[in-house]
Amino acid sequence: MDRCIVLVDAGYLLGAAATLLTGDAARSRLAVDHAGLVQQIRDRAQTETGQPLLRIYWFDGAPDRVPQPEHRRLRVMPRVTVRLGMLTRADGRFQQKGVDAAMHAQLTELARHKAASDIVLITGDGDLLPGVMAAKEHGVAMHLWAVQAADGAYNQSEDLVAEADERHLLDRAWLTRAITAAEPTPLDGPAQHASAPSGAPQTSLSTPARTPAPGDLARSTASVALCWSSDSGWVDTDDSIPLLDTLTSPQQVWVDREQDLEVTGEPYEVGRTFAARWAERLPHDQAADLLARLDQAHPRIPRFLDSELLRYAARFGTIGNEALDISDDHRVQLRAGFWSGIEQATGALSVPTS
Image 1 (cartoon, rainbow, N blue to C red):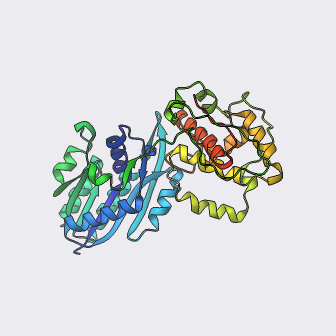
Image 2: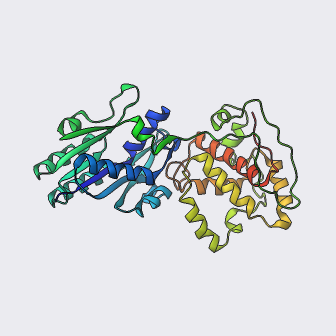
Image 3: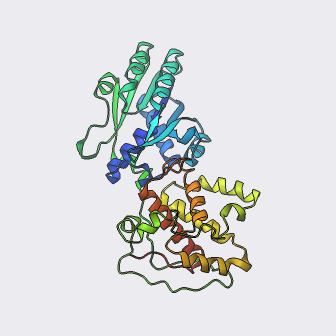
């Protein structure tokens, strides 16, 4: 049929984009406008193939194949289908499992049924070479898109490049229309605060000469507590600090899930989101006492609340998984974001400045 289909390996697209824009393949370092990115892909595919778009298949990994917020946003977009493989972590890096096999199966099935005259591949995986060769035998024109490589490095299989009918580059200018490096959120500075709960303790916040970012915190002495906040011995096991779950009504659970669709998954933002909800839902008659006790524990987060923060963060596939396999750097950023969120929500607590 005279139409085009796009198969996107999200791990390749966003990982290569992160390397190009930040020097690190970690996708958590990116801010992605998924709606804008999908529209760019659609427009370019139709222009370069000269055919109307049938569908975009978005292949990605997720812990236990559970859709993450970005996947839930994507799968309700018109002409977008999300296919998930496993996301595992090895040597401090997240790795996709089963994504290339799913892409290969989808490619060969589409070609065999002549679902499209042109198929666009956004991938660098040489394991798809047999699928590309089979699709060509079925009369499908194969278009291969490459993300601009950082520092002239090669980020696609040479055999895959050679087998493609058409090759096109997604350069920095094209990518940054929808993908940008996430701006580090400061840990301190002139605050624009919401009103503090009635009776909340007031603490004066000083502005440091230079506002530190999460990366600065990782090199400071405070990072020890922020990194290992929930370790045995650091805090009282029975801290009596209420958990967000106990402060949240069933109706609010659904509202939270919808709002999580707008959270990028960047660890610092996740920590801020969690903290803001917790502070806002404290009972008014107990808020002052609870906030004062939380301030006394600073910069450590009481254990049970900290564990709940890590479980919340694990919903975001770019941070960790259900086993709480979260890197030390992400733990530091999560907890730094938590304290910033508390300060933002209450205007009452200090945040790390060293």
